[in-house]
Amino acid sequence: MTWQDRYQATLMNTFGPPARTFIAGDGCYLTDADGKRYLDLLAGIAVVAVGHGNKAVAEAIAAQAARLGHVSNFFATPPQVELAEELTALLAPAGEARAFFTNSGTEANEAALKLTRLTGRHKVVAAEGSFHGRTFGALSLTWTEKYRRPFEPLPGDVTFVPYGDVTALEAAVDGSTAAVVLEPIQGENGVIVPPDGYLAAARRITSEHGALLWFDEVQSGLGRTGEWFAHTASGAAPDLVTLAKALGNGFPIGACLARGAAADLFTPGTHGTTFGGNALACRAALATLAQIGPLLPHVRETGAWLAAQLAGLPGVVTVRGRGLFLGVVLDGDVAPQFQAAALEAGIILNAPRPNVIRLIPPLIVTRDDLAYLLELWPTLCEAARR
Ligand SMILES: *Cc1c(COP(=O)(O)O)cnc(C)c1O
Image (cartoon, rainbow, N blue to C red; front, side):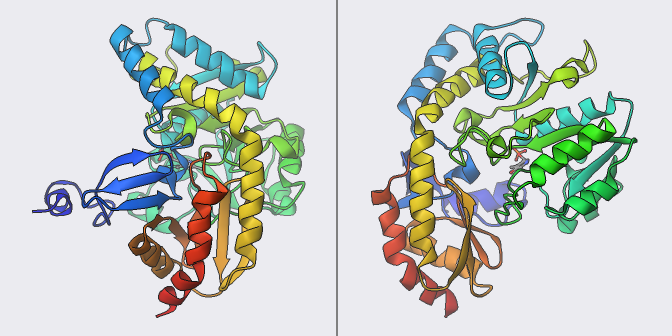
């Protein structure tokens, strides 16, 4: 019996049959149970930002585990305080923002959604094509019919508007709106970048009506675009930011950041968690953040270079995204076949839409690593069409 056979016999069938079993990782490369090596351009879905087997992260976790792993949120630990200071400083001047730590992206969104209810309003405006997670609250903000339908009725009073459409947003937001939630770049929808000015317009519209502006940066945040946040360039200052994926480089941790008046909406007893923000997770995140900062120029340069290289390749209609957050639009619905051919050739990537290949590699990826993808591209394209 292979690992895959044993997996299928014992794990719930939520993800379908696993394509491979991986036993080790090193930087941008993974090794499967047969000893075959793969270039990983998916990074555990935008998670492993500073690479597999990252030494500094591993050592930070080991040292913290030996000293103090968990004490419950009745008490403070230094890693938790340091991480809150570092993350809030990325968003606002000292004293203007606060953090709530979770174990995942959906939990960060759950915290943010509960927080919006404390405004006394309950209407939330979200975008068509959005993905915010699988727990009930986050699912109520998620657009995809196939994820929602089996679980209805969902909580919340949620209105969906076309992503990137300022007029539609203006029409949907009023004095009863608690919050507008947007991904600054939509990830699961195929790496969709909104038109210039959209995020700033969302700030203006929410401010006019006293609603909170909430950016879900779970996938787009923490260096993925070559900036700390994908919204940084827009100049729009959100009230809420949710984070997860890259935060712990694979150690499960998420965060809900709030600034201004929103930062003081939770009071003792209104929300909580057992594991969220424990010393191990926060130490992993601190070791990750310390490495992401110096990588930002590299992410911008390598991402721009990769996008330009891809744009000239066969089968490519357009390349969208920013930094190392790229969606390659193919001239046919062959992205799943392309993904399968790539895996056979030793490259891991995925297809969030039938005609889109998503590239979200570790932020440490180099031009030399990526040369293999570019070299193989015409062959993969041909294989995808057969
Ligand atoms: C992945 C993702 C989530 C959910 O995160 P989980 O850790 O899987 O719960 C939420 N929002 C966005 C934008 C994501 O990409």
